[in-house]
Image (cartoon, rainbow, N blue to C red; front, side, top):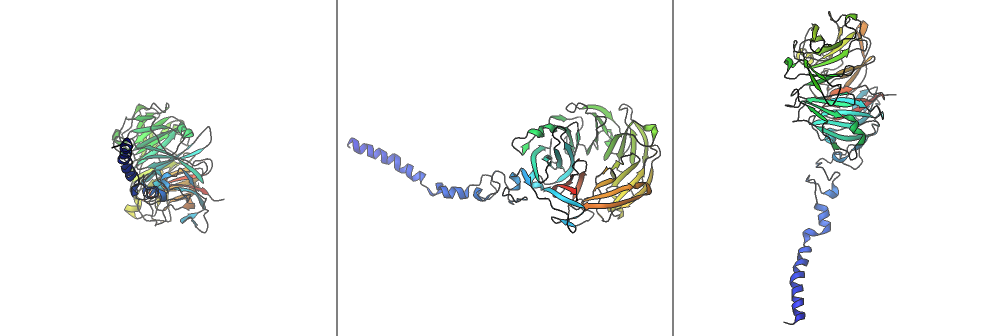
Amino acid sequence: MSELKKVCFVLLVVIIPFVFINCSSSDDPGTTMMTDDLDNDGIADANDNCSDVANFSQTDSDGDGIGDSCDTTFNFSTQSCTNGTADGFACSGYDLLLNIPLDVMEATDGNDSWGWTDPTTSKEYALMGLNNGVAFIDITNPNEAIYLGKLPTATSSSLWRDVKVYQDHAFIVSEANNHGMQVFDLTRLRNVANPPETFTADTHYTGFGSAHNIVINEDSGYAYAVGTTQSNGGPLFINIQDPKNPQDEGGYGNDAYSHDAQVIIYNGPDTDYTGKEILIGSNENEIAIVDVTDKANPQRISTISYNDVGYVHQGWFTDDHRYFILGDEGDEFNFGYNSRTLIFDFTDLDNPSFQTQYLGPTAAIDHNGYIKGNSLFLANYTAGIRIIDISQIGSSTLTETGFFDTYPENNNTSFDGAWSVYPYFESGNIVISDINRGLFVIKKSI
């Protein structure tokens, strides 16, 4: 064979298979473009509004063309409360500024919430409890909220998670097994380059396992974990004055299991306790008043119960420390009440007395309630958030002045809808955490 023929033969042997291999129909650029599915959600990338994260429903709540699972800047137009509705939600006197669904935060259930205002930038942030962690959302401009990311649970998922803030740090507990307390430095939210970020805790305190709730007295620098397996479920005392270095200082277990509590430096009408650190425990079957000034020697002051106790759940002092307003989570189920709020006169801490009760307009269960000035902001499960005027509490008169119903299906006696509310932002924006529909921000109508 001549040299020229040999060369041609070699070229044919090498090139022809290469041509056939690289011209197969599976490598046609047009076909590849139409069939690639990087996130394996069954939707071709060319048609997928979120090709990096599986988004089977293709939900795009703010209509910006980016699926919720990939959307970190959440555009939302304010929906005014007009003729009793805002964007399909029943309302009175409050407008809807924002709603971020749970799937944006990659969660299935919402629970607690709190807020943080950055003392340097004055930006406002919502902290949203989820079944699998805590989400952080910049809501300075609720119409352009930024989902910054999430701190995953320390162990496993749980329907119960609670978060509070002290000295620019978030403190997080859960009923997840062996969860302990996560501490997260909120100033890290100032510099999130590529949201949403998966955060890690700055400190993981393991002085207890699971806890139902975390209570913080910002004036003393103490956290109180309640509903743990220690101290008979009573409050554990944790010094958090150095936020990243929590210190165990004992606990109190001489009363019933504590579901929730409020702890204050007392400045009310009972001068015997002026300046003392007083804990009010919502303890399933009673309210317990305890002097916890001396952590080594806490002292019960008194306890009080009332008729038709279902489940003593959570309460809050009025600003003057004279009245305590309590929610019972079981009386609607067990006794057929409409939403019942109980008011106690704490003028004499040694001898507290029941004053009156307020019945709401629906059969929904009352959950967490917080007081700001002359208003009680009550998370009322299926009835959403109710705002109640307490300015005439001395004459036993409470009046509903507004509401926003985050659960439009019904107002039944069930555990759906609004879990908690945070009404303390200077802007007047109010955060609602909803079990079924995620984060809401509302504001009083002008």
